[in-house]
Every structure is written in structure tokens, then in C-alpha cells.
Length: 276
Image (cartoon, rainbow, N blue to C red; front, side):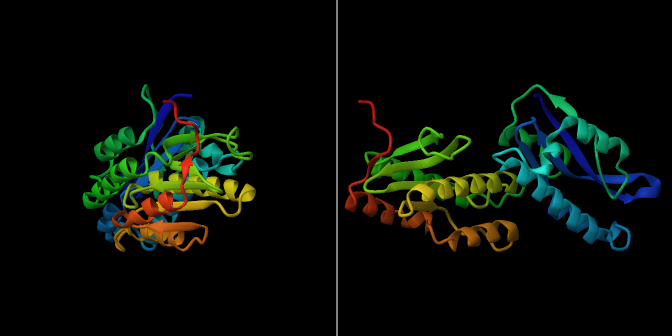
């Protein structure tokens, strides 16, 4: 199916048809991205009708949760899957008449990815936050270090399928994987990245972890990443939930030596045979 996008508008004075852009939805029938400008919403909240701010904020979060559910719905059985439909968004653009309205979907002859979505978001909605300068660098540095230090122990950036783990109904990418007496799996992520990217990544990884643990309870899981700013509440909530998830060992980017030591102490080998 083709890629399309739809702009989400917030009506300031519905009786005068006065509105501003507040969010962007983009999909291709298989995956979707959605984000809204929370800072922009805070600026205009006094311009909204009585009770309008809380209603709009609640609806935006509901749309965000629905889009995330669709993105991570591996069985494609979630009722929100129709939200991915271009025809359904076109229906909403015509018949929905609330504080939040969608524009008529616009087709694009490009692949759906984070870069394209971010460019459109900045063009139509709002400037993306610039709080992600130090963390991505530390995340990238940690990965470069691990590639050099544990490269002989694991495979990096591989896609796992049901051929590798029964019950893994769709392919799942992982930062690194190896084995000794048990499987050793690691994921690396920047927790200040856009929510529409972060949530599906975490959801897909947790599904992989659960799939592996059903077969091998003692499998070892590392997750490399840093605590995001507490000002990014949703990001911080995700980080804290994952940090407290017992099967996964949390590793800050400046403490990856513990992964290096584990690989050496347990003589971990690559999960897939390395072609020489």
C-alpha cells in the first residue's frame, strides 16, 4: 500500500473555522507514525473553549496510544488497525467535526521512515525539540565501543525470525546476540528519541524477550541506554518501567564494561556462525 499523511488540526474558534496544526499522522497500511506538538498545545491552551484543553490533550494521547498499539500489533488483530487505513482517515476528514480534525490524506511516493516523518512534522506542525544532542552521542559511542570490544562474542544488528525462535511471528531486529549455556541478547537505544519511534521499538523488543524466555527462562538480556530528562515525562515513564523489568539488566552507556566482562567471563560466542 502507498504511503500517506494526514495533518491533525486543533480548532481554536470552531464557529469561525479558526484552527492550527497540532499533529501529524503518517502510515503505509503496515506501519504508522504519529506525533503531536505538546509545547504548541500548552501555548494555545488559553485560546481553547472552556474545558477544551483537557479534552484535546486527552484525545491526542488516545490517538497516540492507538497508533502505538497498531504499530506494535504483531498479529494485526487490534481493532485500531483501521486507523492505518487511508479511507478511514479520509472519512474522518469529511465527517469528524470536533476540536480535533484530520486533513484529507495526502499520498506520497516515498517509503515511510523516521526521517521523512520528521521533515513533514517540522514543515507542517512544529519544530522538533533539540534536547537530543548529548544522549544520542553517548549512545552511539557506547555502541561503537561494544562493536570493537565484544565483536568476536556476538552478532551485531541482526534480524531474528521464527526460524530462530519459535513463536516469533514477525521478524525482530536486535542490537546484538550471542550464546553460551544460554542466549545472550542486547538492545541499545536513545531514550530521548521521538515517542512514535521509541514506543514501537520497546514494544517489539519486549515481545522478543518474552518469546525467548518462554523457551529459555535463564536467557540473559542487556539493555543499554541512559535515563532521559524527567521533563520528558512519557519518555521517562518508559525508561523507568523498563529499568524495573526484572528479566532485563539495565546498563547506562558509561557502564558497558560490565557487558564486556560478562562476555569474557562466560566465553560467549556469536549466535550465528561467522563467515570467515
